[in-house]
Amino acid sequence: MKYAIAICLLLSVCYRPATAQKAYTILESHKELDPSRYDEIKGSPYLYNDWLPATVVGSDGKMHENILVNYNGLTGELEIKRENRQTEMEPSSYLKVMVHTPAGTQAFYRGIHPQLGNKLVCVLYDGVRVKLIRDFKVRKQENEMQTPLNPTVFEKFVAQSDYYLMLEGLLHPVKIKKKKIMALLDHKQEIEKYIKENNLNLNTTEDVIKLLAYYETTLLES
Image (cartoon, rainbow, N blue to C red; front, side, top):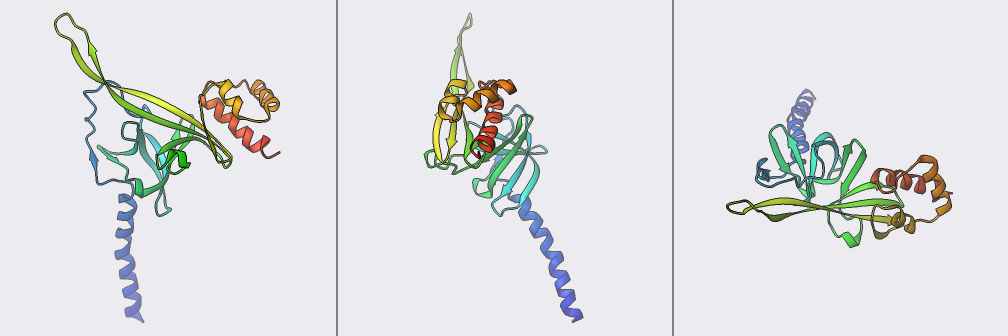
């Protein structure tokens, strides 16, 4: 009996490092990134100005907290920053990433709607029946600067965001403007009252998110 207990203890000790190693590598791609690779290009390909803390739901369902991430609109992938290293997240290593921004939590995941295929998108409002989706894309553009002697050619990043409002499973392209948002929603009288009472500006994503939360939890449930 003593030998059996000793063997179990030995196995448990040996198992722990393997488990910890799996939890660590799940957040990293085999592909290391050069932090200086964009130094010669004007602007930034990233969605956020700073690397932000995130909660990562691994493909095994485990939660990993306080992981510094940013979304690269040029590659369409999330990246991790740890100490002096940058790595691109392996798509198969996670199910969902929730980035904690000053404006609130924004979720990243794939397969949200067939029209978007398997593209990784940012979900600004992630309700059950209502979702506001941002597709942030960046491309490189070559520009020419005229100088007295010779023109100088340089590259810069050009960003574009496409938004979608998903209502009851139907995907609608939309602009963040009051008229466009209102055209897709029912209960217009109640919405107008809520906008006025809360002084909302539907030309901003922050206030559109507030309205959608009210719309789903109050008006659609009534």
